[in-house]
Length: 173
Image 1 (tube, rainbow, N blue to C red):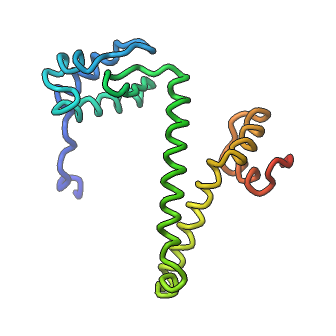
Image 2 (cartoon, one colour):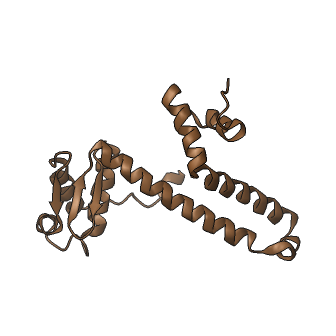
Image 3 (cartoon, rainbow, N blue to C red):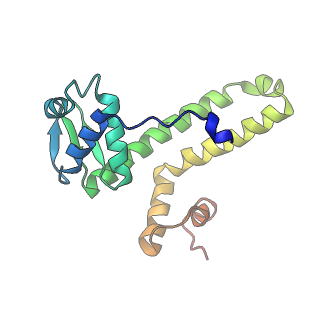
């Protein structure tokens, strides 16, 4: 009975469908200029049609077709190497955000920390620990240790990667 009160999920727009169909035909490694995307959408792909383009890209990404933006040029259907390079940029960005977040979190100082409620102190400590793990995990020393483990054992589950943090380069069981 509660489902009757929910608003219906918005239908996919015609513009999104047209862009999705067009991008589905793009081969890996091919680039599509903004002008061509604008013609397909019927309006500026960098302006009014951009949300529809993003929706089409998300839909196709779920199907395994990844598109990357080439600034000032258009979009390119990513090759596997493009995805690896994009992940590297993502990791650098995450590292910067984690360092900035930790600086802000610990910027409250001892007096600020002491003024927090017990619940807020706990949240402060948990978030600080998580930001610390993220910050450490993108450092070159830790990445080399992870690389050594992955090169001998393949992709590791997160629980096994904890050994890299606790044991460094030592061989873990």
